[in-house]
Amino acid sequence: MAYQAVLTDPSEGREHLVRLWLDNLPVRGDARAKLDWLYLDGPAGRGEVFLLRDERGAPVGCAGITRRELWRGDQPLKTALLADLAIDRAHRTGMPALVLQRATKRHVDAAYDLSYGFPNANAVALHRRIGYHVLGAMERYVRVLRHSRYLERKYGRPIVARAAGAVIDGAKLAVRTARAFAPSRAAELVWLDDVDPRFDRLWEQSRGAWGLAGRRDAAFLRWRFLRKPDEKVAVAALCEKKGGALRAYAIVGGAPGDFALIADAFGSIEAQGDLLTLLAPALTTRGHTAIGMRFLGDPRMTEMLRAHSFSLRDAHRTVIVNPGATCPIDPAIVRDTARWYLTDLDEDT
Image (cartoon, rainbow, N blue to C red; front, top):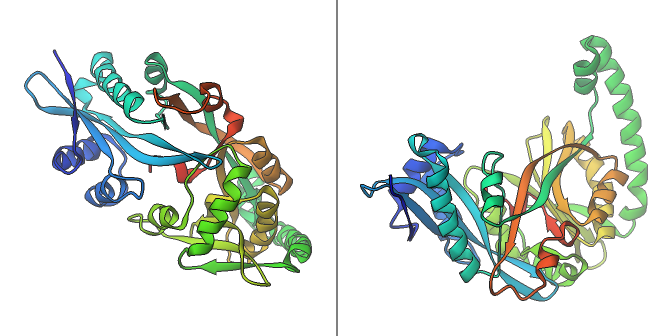
């Protein structure tokens, strides 16, 4: 059977895309709302899609391209984030996927400075075959705040676990509160409902401290986290007591009484350390049981997480990269894991 991959405007292919997603992908919430948000309303520009058509012209697969901006210091890079690869079950053989992904790669190599993506385990080999480099896997770090559930899972005996957990929690909260004294003399943790121009200034001031980092100004953060359908987060900001300048922030998801996920954090390494010092007791007080964060890139960040009692739990989400024909930086830099700064913000959500 012959297949053809056709570059298609997301609006024109809306119904085909929604059907392919619902039939083949784990879409959370309203698929049409996701299409509007991710492909039509992004601050870096409209996304693109390839539809895979069989010999009768029927759409049997798709591959999405969402626009992002990666920066290296003061140099912006037009970036393609690969997303929403889906092929109907009856066509999941090697050839259809290869036709679709080769067409997508030819396009992004010519039209973008670089491309990256988070393929599932079944698609990693395909992307390597067509020329993508495996950067690594997103590492998930976790810090336990409330220990009774952990002790019960490990040792059983619920009553004893609750009692022991309460003792451990009280002792650790006292230590966390004491450690927060030093940074709290000059700064405070503030919970915000929205982002503001201070986030623009933080992005401009801090992006040079990292290598390849995705855009994190107020407009992007508002779109990525506060306007995303079916998601609620809180913004934890480390602000100077004198003048209110923003030093660092964390985007926190998860309901009180449950796991708190840091979906993104940014600032200098020192400021982020102070932020975590204040954030841990604050999240404990809010009733969260643990804190988690996924990251891949600069080893200073993982060292800082370990210094704040975060432990590596797993590393499952593979990241692939490829410099395009117009990439203005050395391809070796693009392929160097230590030059990146990747969090959940950068995923094809």
